[in-house]
Image 1: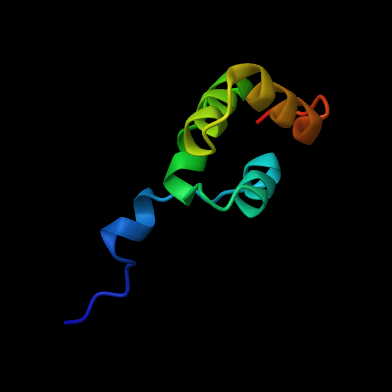
Image 2: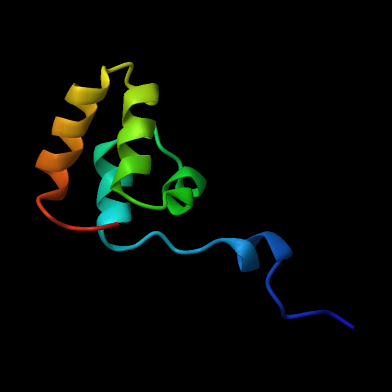
Length: 72
């Protein structure tokens, strides 16, 4: 008998939507797993700071300009 269910890996992936998908598109160094793991804008700032080797104030300005009041 064959099973018609999807592989387990597909069941655990959360679709990336909204600002998260825009972040993934703008910030090419992020993968879907990293994007879905973000809890808030502070997490995004920390990740941008690390991945793009920016100081914290610059990373904060970049995220603020991109987010424009939106939340993850």
